[in-house]
Length: 546
Image 1 (spheres, rainbow, N blue to C red):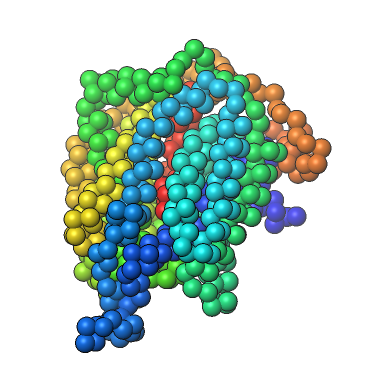
Image 2 (cartoon, helix red, strand yellow; image 1 turned 120 degrees about the vertical axis):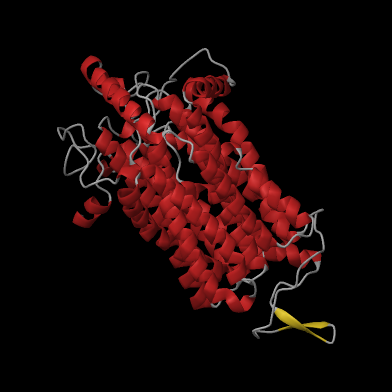
C-alpha cells in the first residue's frame, strides 16, 4: 500500500483520471508507431510484389542473405496508386491536415458544450475499438483495412487529446502543484511507452515471433491496457462539466486565433517570427519519427522488434537529453540553448543517412536513435520554456492557444514533401536530410526573438496579474470561473480509493497540500485561465498516426 501511494499519490479523482488517461494514450501511440507501422510497410511491399528482406543478386536472381553487402531491394512497384514506402507519409499527411483544421473547432466545442466528459469517453472507446479491430492484421492481406482503422484511431486521438487536456486546470489551484502534475503526467506517458515496449519485445523474443506476430501481440495488449485505463478514467474519475461559454460558433476558435495573431503582429513582430520558426521546427521534429520508421524498415530491413528496441533507446536517451538541455541553459541562457538544440538536431539529420544506409549498419542505427532521443529531450521542453518566458501576463490562455496551433499548422508539410520526393524516385535518405533544412530555417527565424526584453516584460505583467487575481478572486474561481464544481456521483462499485480524503487540504497529494520536489524550469507553464487548449500536449503523442 505504501508503494501504491508513492507511485499514485494524488487524492482528487480528476488528477488520477489524468494519469490513467496519459498511460492509456501512451500504449495507443507506441503500438501504432512501432509494431503496426512495420507490418503495414512489409505487407504493402509484399502485395506490390517486392522483396522485404535483405539479400543479393546472383546471376540476376535475388537471394536472401545476411552478408555485409546485402541490401533490401528498392521497391518501385505501386499499390493503391502509391509506392509502398509512401504509405506512412500519406497517413501522416492526412492526420496532420485534420489536426490543423480541427483543433480550433474542437476547442470551441469544448468551450460551448456541457458534454466534455462524454466526448472524451466516446473518443477513447473509438480508439479502443479501432485497435481491437486491428487484430485482423494476423492476416496480412487485410493490411489496407488496418491502415484505414489507424487513420480513424489517429483522428480520434487528436480529438481526445484536446478533451483530456481541458481537465488539467481542474487538478489544482496551486501553480507549483500544477507544474508537478503536468510533469508527472508526462512521466506516466513516457514510462508507459517504455514498459509496453519491453513487455511486447520480451513476448516476441521468447515466442520467436516475427513482424506479424509482434503486431498481433501489441494490439492485444494495447486493447486490454487502454480499455481498462480509459474505462476507469472516463467512467469513474472524470466529472461532467458545464459549458464555459455560450453563444459562440464553431468558427470562434479560428476567430480567437486570428485576433491573437493580429495583436502579436502589430505589438510583438519578433514573437510572430519565433512562432513561424517553431512551426517548422515542430513539424520537422514530428516528421523524424515517420521518416525514420520508413527508412529503418525499408532500407535497413528492421523487424518490428528491432524497431521497438530503436524506439526504447531513443526514449531512454531523452533523459540525458533533458539534463543536457538544463546544463546548456544554465551556461548559455534559455534562448541560446533552444537555438543550439535545433542546430544539434539538424546535424543529426545530416549525419544519419551517411552512417546507416544498409542492413549491415543496423548497430549504428541504435547509436543514431540515441542521438535523436537526446534531441527530443532537449529541444521540445526548452521551446516551451522560451515561449512561456515571453508570455504576457493576463493573456496566457490565448497565447498558449496560438502556441499549440503554430505547432500543428504546418505539421502536414514534411509528410507531403516526403511523399512527393518518394513518388518522384528520390531516395528516402534525402528525406531525412531535408529535415535539416526545416531546423535551419527555424533557427534563423527564432534567432530574431527579442528574448531578454520580452522575458522581463512578461515576468512583470504575469506577476502583477497573478497578484491581482489572488487578491480579487481567490481560489478555484480565479482559474476556471465558469465551471460547475459539483462532483458527479461515482458508481457504488468504485472503490473509496478513487475519492479524496476529507479534511486533507486543497492540494492534490496524499503527503502535502502542495507539490513536493523541485520542478525544472523547462517544465513550467502558466495555468490556463479560459481556453481549453491552454496546456501544450506531449510531443510523443504526435506519433499516433503511424
